[in-house]
Image (cartoon, rainbow, N blue to C red; front, side):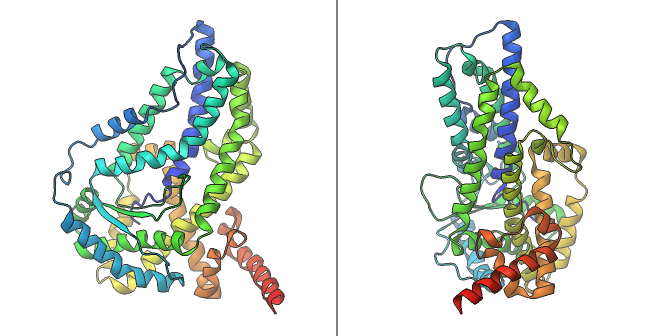
Length: 408
């Protein structure tokens, strides 16, 4: 499976929001004990600083000064080739073609994603601003919570994360979640990383690039052929961020607020639960799991189409699949740690779980029934149903039968 980052910002933003919250509490307690006060009320993240850090981590990019038009035309042709194959596999025609297909350098990928990350953090910045107004004068709890030190740390964290992702992402369908206006998505191909991995693994250059393209075009079809999908995704994210208002209020209580998060983690130690979920309220966890379920189907579908179509289309498919799977199964300990801390390990699980679910449903009920997942929010499986496809089949069969009876 290629390192596609179509929706990783949703998971990462949730993680960073939780991290920022806990970091803010720790900063507050430390400053209160030391009697410190911070002048001014800076924003949570200095986005220019974050971009500068991410770009600095990717200075040695062989594609940075390469002529782009030839590569842009090459990938645009790949997209045209993949589009009808993906449409047939998904069972939907995309109403609008993908207008923007580009081969980009790592620095360009960072620049494109900075604005998207900023959109995702906008609700948290609003809560931060509201807290500053409530706390009043400089030096109040709001300033202590998110002062210059925490801004520098969070900016560095975002910059380092973007710098890391820029070195690993191969392709991306960027739909700009929580952007102020709806717009067609963009397809990016990070040629430096694609070329490096293709050479390292000894893969056929055209087959490998078409394999990646199938995955990204699948995401384009998901969101542009099913117009409910992006608003629903945005709705879930807004619901999740709205629940953080309560947490921001708890933070104004200083050390007492810190105990709130410790109590959550201590009282909810369910097996297999990530650290992000441990500090969530039940309401936050419910929304987070709905986001997880949606992303698992979105990412799993990308892999499902990429592999099912690729197997029939690409002469070297088996070799590509085996080499990439083997590489991902033998990551270095430091890579595994980074993925665990950032939530990227969750995304890799989504690839596998979503693909297994869709294959199981297709084998049991056929592709037309499987495509019902794209009918609307009611047809999306829950986290538990993804683990038990038969349960989803039973529930959706009832929904479909009821709606057919109403139409009749």
